[in-house]
Amino acid sequence: MQRWFLTFCAVAVLSVSASANAQEEERLTSGSQVGDPREMVQYVRNALEEMMNGLKSVSKLQEVARRQGDDEMIRCVQNKLANVRALMMVSERASGAMKEAQGVSNPRRAEHEFRKVVVSLAKVRQFVSDAAGCVGEGASSDGTSEVQVTQSGLTEGDDSSALDDYFLVIGVDPAPTSPFE
Image (cartoon, rainbow, N blue to C red; front, top):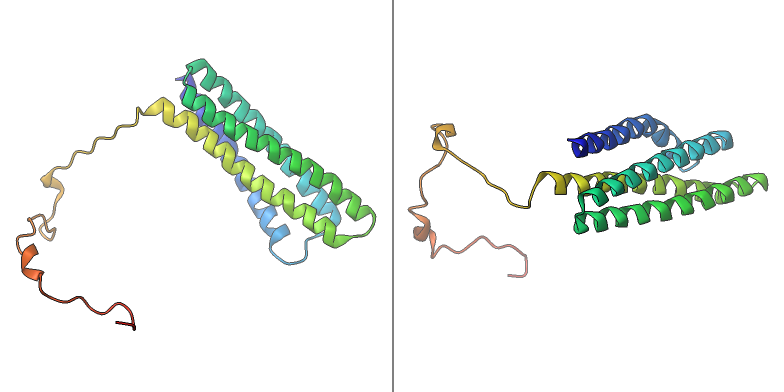
């Protein structure tokens, strides 16, 4: 039960933070020119904060996986955690480089570093979601599926009969598929 609660919390945090930043991200990255330097700095600050929260979420998921003792789940979450950490380092360096570029009035370099953070944030969101999937998949299923189908759900127009005339169509040439035939 606690696994489901933690997975639900991780997904809820992701969806709330993703929707809150989606409009801001679209506004800042929609054109070829990025916005005001103060807006860029504020966006990067918010992005780094969201990435840190994602890192904490994945760390908690790692603890859940360790408590369950499933080696495959632990490896899956650890891979996502390593990726999130690497993206955090890239984003922190890009943030410093962006501020430095803004300080020497180099808007192209500042925009380049800003876009690194934007891309990193999108990837961190994906890795956090994947990590939640690592724990959720192992907690809910043993890898088998079962599907039950009854004929009561079929309507009059459904073709539920066998393909009796399947072999009658042999001998008919298919339509040409390329101009080189």
